[in-house]
Amino acid sequence: MGLAISVGTASWAGDDEGLTHHRARFDGLSAALAREGVVWRTPVDFGDPVFLPEESGVAGAGMVGSSHRLLAEVRECAPAIGIRLEQDGSLSDAEADRVYALPQSAPFEIESVVWLALHEACRASVSTGQAIIFH
Image (cartoon, rainbow, N blue to C red; front, side, top):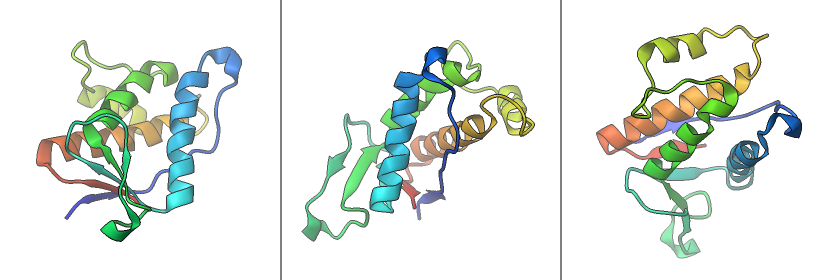
């Protein structure tokens, strides 16, 4: 049994805030979710997502990516939305609690909560060997 997560984003800062690169990554993920309906991330470390042939029977047009790669990308985006990671790239419990408790009026509140959900799903996937299923 894999982990299931639903993801959505509603707002982004302007390009003048230097977030174009990171926004494109999250927008790409949102577009994939909207287009395919189901996206798989497996706890196997490989590069770009692969698209399996239709006859594979994998839902979501056979799109399979690596939860290791997604975790690395999510961690790379953290500073742009004000999330502070430890020196080793991990997320402290205190920082996770801070992000979870952000008021709705806080800058990047939606993005931060989505980031936290993605981060925790990836971390759990890597540590347990279970796939993430975005639906």
